[in-house]
Image (cartoon, rainbow, N blue to C red):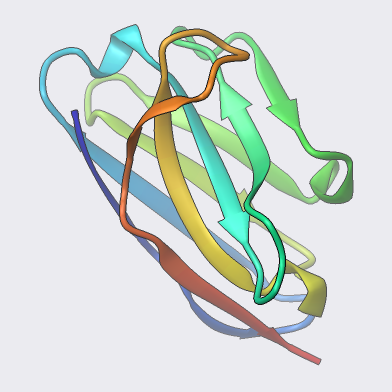
Length: 118
């Protein structure tokens, strides 16, 4: 599976962005998909995950109520809608594919930079 993330950019605090991650290959629907981020000087963290069918999701506490993950089975794309952005959301965001909901990623996409100005 090859993953291509897009949609990052510069936004003011309180604004919104939608990240997209397009996956190649016919096995996209077999994988749990997730978004991760790494801020300068910090370790990479899980932001959100979504199960193969989309029924189960997970969000890190810091984004609950503000971010929403979704997937389009036909377009082989996973999205991260980010609302009410804060400066502390500034990071490089990566999409990834996992075999199970709690496992480590087996495929990574290149990151897309999100910068939130105060």
